Image (cartoon, rainbow, N blue to C red; front, side, top):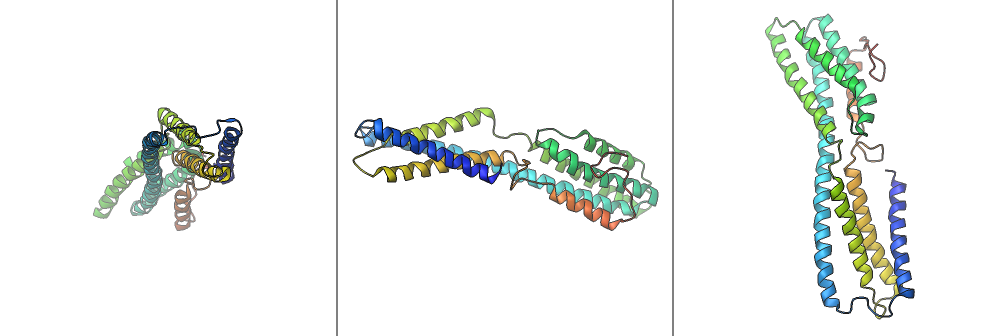
Length: 271
């Protein structure tokens, strides 16, 4: 979500609530809406505290999901580079097959998997390259002790790569479900509505009450937008997780073997 859109939504929400405040000030009762302010304050405290605890809990869950998505991307790209270097211990023909597949896998992740994750999907192109990697692993000639160690590393790193991809793709799905959004929206409306009930024309001026109401609205709406952002880690928006680490890994692999020609296009499509 664009930052200007976020600002516009918050400003618009504050404008709506302040407009309601002005309307109530002009056409509402001439004294307080809640005659027993002590009882009203007690109800508002319970409702406000419950809503604040719920929002804090949802923010924490969404942040953990966002952080897991970032860690999965890092784990996958690190494992891919180590796989590329571990392949150096095998005969040239087999080594080049594996390294070509690794470069194509990285390109497909960048160009295919990342856009698909925005729609909670996974790219079949990346799946095909993962299968090709496994097929070439099975054909490696393991003769020396050094190659045995390298092959064991390949298997471990291949599992790390698969785990990293699984982790980042799992977090592409929305963590905050529709019922939670419903409760959050209902809680936001109730809290802002209760704040409107505490209008007291005998106390603060309309401007002061508008500032307090706008502050409450900005915090509530801003927090809801933050939850939405954290719940969509791969969205094409400022602060979203981009395939930066994978792009760096592909660049390093190509720089280490400049003469290696990967049998795929720049977007990972097999040639």
